[in-house]
Amino acid sequence: MRFDVITLFPEQFRILSREGVVARALSRGIAELRLWNPRDFAPGPHRRVDDRPYGGGPGMVMLFEPLAAAIAAARAASPKSQVAYLSPQGTRLDQDAINDIAAKPGWILLAGRYEGIDERLLERCIDQEWSIGDYVLSGGELPAMVVMDAAIRLLPGALGHERSAYEDSHMSGLLDCPHFSRPEEIDGLRVPKVLLSGDHGAIARWRRQQALGRTWLKRPDLLAKMTLDQATTLDQATTLDQEAR
Ligand SMILES: CN1CCN(c2ccccc2CNc2ccc(C(N)=O)cn2)CC1
Image (cartoon, rainbow, N blue to C red; front, side, top):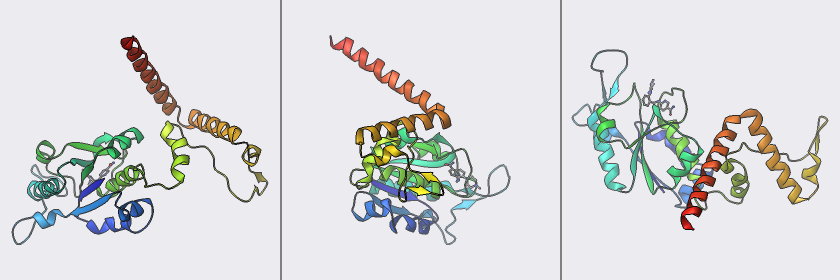
């Protein structure tokens, strides 16, 4: 999977190639990262990438031309990739959206700075607009790294043995179960007996029951979403079954 990131701060992305799941995936060629700086596409001696907003107001706006040129260069290098813009105005991402993102061959991610970008880029050059949450950050670089981390860890071979554990909880739309390790007792707090029993069936049941219980208590909305999804899937299956008869 290939990520082309358009950013005025390419240095910020060094962190991804230094350590962890993403760094390992990049070094193994499971994922690729290429950085494009709009300043390299800005014309004239001053190589301007921003200017004052029409209509006045504080701050600066990122200019159309350098960004459009950087996007065109990235598209030429990665013809199968769509362009996604990280912004507070974007579609809110969740695990389902990340699963869809990870299924694509690649993405060109545009990280905005200043007060944002010239609106005409959204008309002409951008395919999707995403938000990682309802809060404002100083730039789109961190959201781009969040999306890359969430997507790359889903790629085959990215996670080692821990993927199976990962699959049990989050992928099922539930919150994770509690985790414990040595020692068995800390300040009077003990590890649940079932986890010491060696009965893997009972342990799996306990973990699922804990995940359900925690989701019920902390995020009942996820349960509602899940049962709705399952109901829809069930309904689709029934319809398919009827059509097949
Ligand atoms: C001071 N201004 C900096 C630039 N910013 C802005 C405006 C438009 C687009 C991108 C940005 C970059 N910021 C982002 C990006 C994404 C998210 C998210 N929720 O996904 C939050 N913030 C507006 C505020």
